[in-house]
Length: 74
Figure (tube, rainbow, N blue to C red):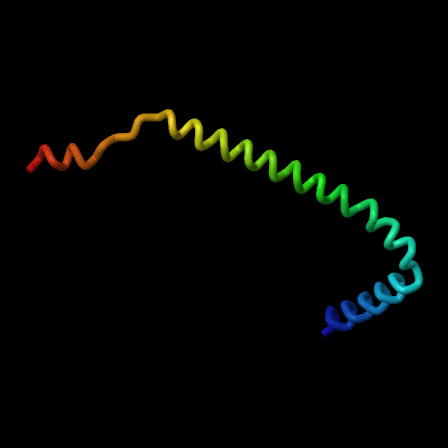
């Protein structure tokens, strides 16, 4: 119950602050959103390179043909 009251009070203070300092909030948001997109793009490129590298290394290894081995036993 205490966390519910604390959460509601925090939300009220936050909404009050956003209302009174909306121009500063928009100013910060205009600078933060492109930086977040840039960092997300960097993470996506790194994940893509990592995924490409792991699939390239597994494609070069020969695979065992288990169907041929099972056919010889019969």
